[in-house]
Image (cartoon, rainbow, N blue to C red; front, side, top):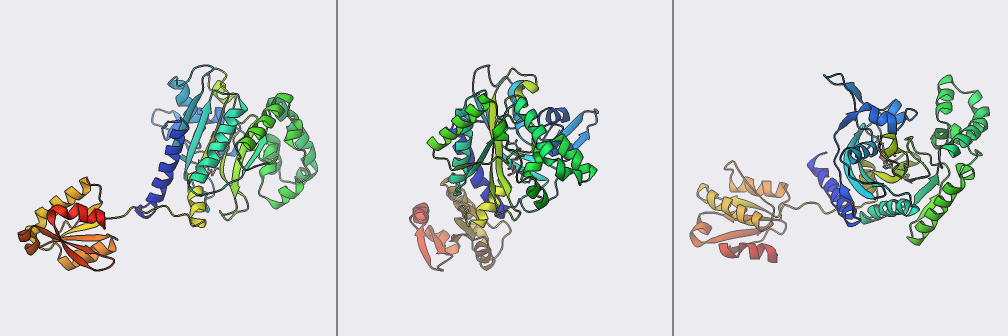
Length: 406
Ligand code: HAM
């Protein structure tokens, strides 16, 4: 990430962190790597992320470690390790983190990428799901993107077991002609057949049973309440029975926002859901939770596809010494202007007036503040507007006022 792009990242980071703060979320920063076991126990052994995509290594002490492939498990590990919550209490966390997945790189798909994440830990209420989804839509809106959320419910373990069987028996005819590898993957996690991007699989699964028809009554009630809350919040959404997510820890609610602006058919801009067993799976008390991960690279691609351009940082002025004698004065001017909030550069290498003016142009400086022999003697500076090319003399003491006025 280079300076020509970094300001876009700074913009998104600023907008997101301010919004998360407004909703009462506190920031958590977790390490780049964790014990591999953390991800195996949470994201799951049947998920591709854990199975195929982790950067795993032994360190010099023979510890089995992995670069984090996602942000939720590390945040919850920190939550437990540092006692960030108590039973029955709600804890709200956000993070902006790099994550690592050994994937086939493409547009919006990288091996090191970044996520903005929210985790609402400790509430079983559909109001918690609604808060996370409403915030997600609010985050996109606050950088200028209108979105529609696809929501689904995967129910609980019992639902999943019954649904798994139904899906497998539905897919049997299709799977019969497939390779050993495909059959093995499908048997391990048949739900993934539903979010395949392979047109053949999509066609084969078109009439598959829907998980929503398998929900237990508690899950059904939770889902219906969530849909009412989303309507109340005027969140644009659609029920999308094919959303299954690629990580194993989800229970009940899952959601994604997709876009076709990334080139491939239906790529996820963000994804999240409820994970009521994860904290307990890591040795904590039962702590129902819900969260979301927003892909930052994908967001930035969509922003530029839509022509959404945050303000670039401006260089207000270059302070220029026309003679060597003026250099200390120019340094003093640069110092004063920076203290007053202007961004200012100076030449460090004794270049000619002409080459400094050329450089100021290249750097996109709005103005040149020039001090030479005459200006030094008269207590003046020459203020040149580099876009218009006009130049005026300003008393040294009135420089800040002149810059502000212009
Ligand atoms: P995830 O769906 O695996 O969820 O990732 C979240 C988002 O990260 C995706 O929707 C996508 O925008 C972005 N993303 C994923 N892989 C890549 C990649 N290789 N390159 C660029 N962007 C990518 C999670 O990671 C969960 N931890 C989300 C969550 C939080 N669930 C509950 N709390």
